[in-house]
Image 1 (tube, helix red, strand yellow):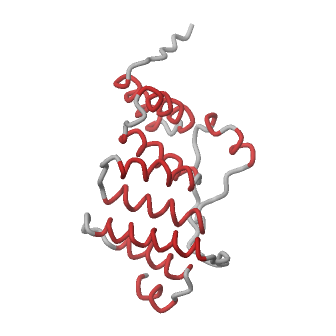
Image 2 (tube, one colour):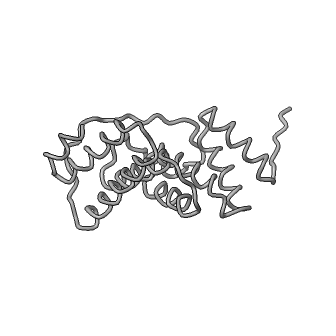
Image 3 (cartoon, one colour):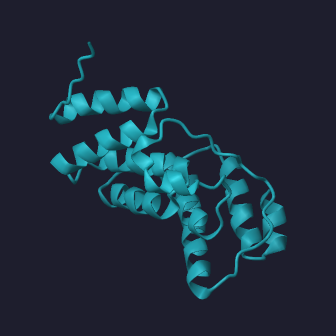
Length: 176
C-alpha cells in the first residue's frame, strides 16, 4: 500500500518540489510548482524554479515569461540573468534538442529530459526586426549577468553566439 501525501502548505510543497527536481522528475516538480503558485502567485522563488525547468525542457517562451516575472519580483543573480538571456535567445535560435509532439501535449508527465547542446550555430534564422530586438535584449541580460559574476567565459560564449546569429562575425569571433 502506498501512501501519497498531497500537501497544501507552501513549505511542504517546496520540499516535495526540491525532491522531484533532485530525482530529475521534472513533470511532477512542475505540478508542485504550479500548486505553490496557485496558493501564492507572487512566489518569485518558485517562478524562477519554473522558468529554469521550462528552459531546460526547451520551452523558451514560457521560460522567459516565468524568469522575467521572477526578475520583476526582485530576484537577482548572475545565473538568473544568464538563463533569462538564454530563454530570449532560445526563442529565436534554439540550441537544444527538440521536444517531441507527444511531450508538448503532456509536459506534466515528463520525468527526465536531457538537452543536447549543439555547437554549430548555422543555419541562421530569418532575422526580423522583432527577432533582432529580442536578441539585443538577450545580449543586455548577459551584460547584466557579467556585472554579478567573475566567471565571464560562459557569458562571452553566449554573447559570441548571439553576435554570430546577428551576422556580426567580427564581434562574434572575438567573443569565443
